[in-house]
Length: 144
Image (tube, rainbow, N blue to C red):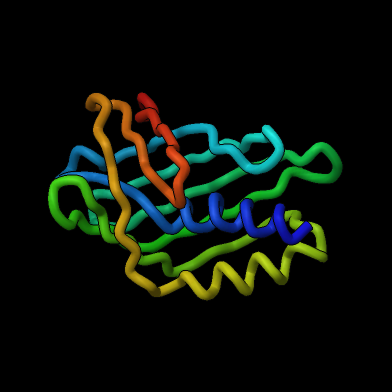
């Protein structure tokens, strides 16, 4: 269970508190699929606003139990050509099993209000990749 918590937290919460971008190119809604554990994946939606704020939602449906959701928000600013500084200001969890809920909350709270730098690679104008703790997450711009 601790391995699941560690991986889930490392991927979901840290990615939730990370991002990428340059100028206003990043503004918009981005979607992707993120690995969780044992071949299972979850859906990730990242919104970057023009005012320098962001929000995101990670949704994971475990084999047993209800869909779990991690939501976070904060601020972001470009730092150099391929880096983005992000500071998470809130994280909320939904439908986490009791044995995971407090552990994930405690670990997530340690990341709040800390500036975090993330690498970004622009594949094209509508596709980016993020490197997060030795994992790569590909996000595609949602056409509105």
